Image 1: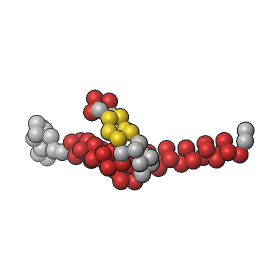
Image 2: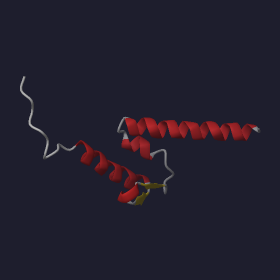
Image 3: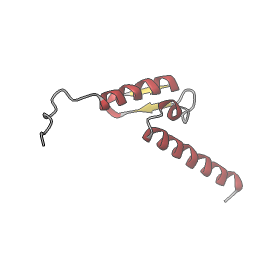
Image 4: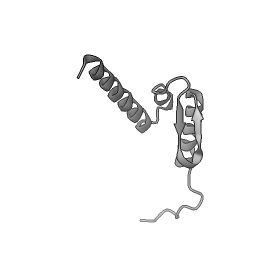
Length: 79
C-alpha cells in the first residue's frame, strides 16, 4: 500500500467520524461541512437535496418533526 492510500483512508475515516458525531449531537452546520459545496444528501422518501444550506434545512425539518410533542400522547400517570 502506498502512502497516499493511507492518507486517503484516514481522511475518509475522519470525515465519517465528524459526520456521525455531528449528527448524533444535532450540530447540523458541522454535519453539512462534511459534504462538498454541491454535495447531495438523500433521505429515502423525503427525497434528496444538494448543497450545504439545503442539507441543513432538510435535516432541521426532520429534527423539528422528531422532537415535536405528540398530539396523541398518553396522559401522564399519577403516582
